[in-house]
Image (tube, rainbow, N blue to C red; front, side, top):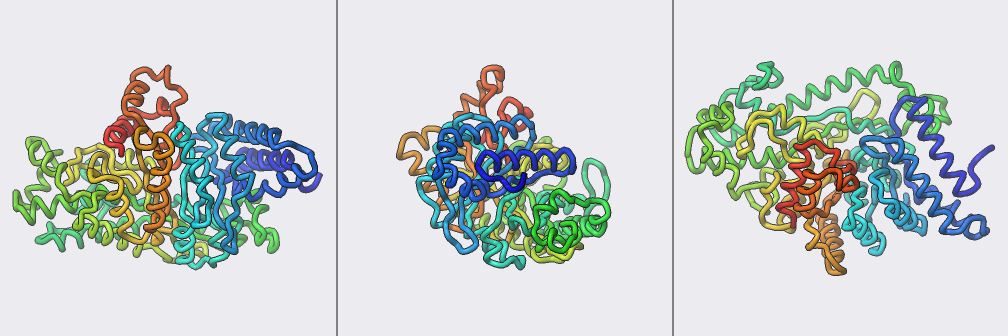
Amino acid sequence: MGAPKNTYEALQLLIIYFFVHENVGGSRVRTLGRLDTMLYPFYKNDIAEGKYTKEEISEMLKFFFGKFYAFGDQYGTPLCIGGVDGNGEDITNEMTYLIVDSFNAININSPKIHVRVSRKSPEKLIKTVLCNIRGGNSSYVFLSDESVVSSLMKVGITESDARNYVPIGCYEPTVWGKEIGCTGAGHVSTPKAIELVINQGRDLASGKVIGLETKIPNSFEELKDAVKAQIKHLTDVSYKRICEIEKHYTEIYPDPILSAMYDKSAEIGLDVYEGGADYNNTAIQFYSIASLVDSLAAIKRIVYDEKRLTLAELFEVLKNNWEGSEKLRLIARNLPEKYGNGNEGADALTKEFSEYCSSLLLGRKNARGGVFKPGSFSINKCFDMGAKTMATPDGRNAGDPLSKNLCATVGADRNGITALINSVCCYDHSLFPNGAVLDVVLHPSAVSGEDGIDAFYGILMTYFAKGGMAMHGNVFDPEVLRAAQKYPEKYKNLQVRLCGWNAYFVNLSKAEQDSFIRHAEVAY
């Protein structure tokens, strides 16, 4: 009895806690924590005393990972490695590498591993993970310590606490052992705001009024103002609903098992949802910035610059899902003013609307004594929300997926990875402390050999140097994906990084598979 004395007991305690919390407590374990930091003292002592060998501990880790894989969590169980400690010193150790190597050796798609990266992170560690991704294990996401720490400090978290963050869920930074983040409380689809402008606040499919009644704008500036008004309305509705629910958290959502993991909760004898956490924050995500930017840029070019038709006429075309206007749709789809290409006009819209969305929430008081943290990612909601969104001015048909996370619309980024990174980083990502992530899809030929890994490493570190917050990657040959779609029985172990979790390609919906194939066709 008592505290664990070695690596085996530490791993066993983590397993017991996970299953008790999930199955008895009834709430999700959103991270296993900074696993290398927790396990290293046990590992170091076991090796020094000769209790276990490195090989034996590796086998323990493989069994440990297998328990969570067998649990079958659709979204994957996350754990964190790397990064700095509260004093800003790198914590990478032998256990960090052993975790990566042991996980890669068993070729499973879960747990998922959050890799914290700072300027002090060893190049060897990052390249080891990149080699694993190139080899087909895409269960990793990288997060920039510099960007994340800066973002958390913007919502009142101390620098020391911010440095000790752990991503929970998909990629949402949260202070380890001190914050209840509520990171998925609400969502706002930014392209939906254009539909609401077109239909005076009504959802086209249902006819329900879900937005503001706005008049048809007379200028591009008026159009931008109308779209912003609709985004603000959607944000305010989400904000108010969340706050009403949060008032009752202490009554409907006590979590004594989680509370036992928080020092403050144990010291003052209160549940974490009753004041037992130092930081009690809430998050709302803003979806599909690329679809919004491309749509606004298309309206500017087609209606106001080239005057091909009036705004009212374009609205009618969109209501009819481009029927009878295929030539115009192709023009809109192939305009040069697209997010992700380093285009000055598109980048200006990206910066303007990203900063506006953040301003609606950043630091806004919630109902639990904390504040709101905006996020800029969609996960797989880009498919769900796309199915509920009418045709958009960028040439997209009704029901098609919207853009994902910070990615460009599929096929729209035609000027290379450098232009994409420059566009994505044209605003301050730390304005979104709940996370902002870019998906990168590379062709195998782009990352082959030692030069390929150097190039992959250069892409990641350049993105972080420019202020990017998080990145994950897939390395695909589109021919392999097409074959997997046609003969799924032959490709049961083909992994893809779906959004904030890893999945087997053959288990995805056809719409999701088609999206990956299109991405692979235009991969860098």
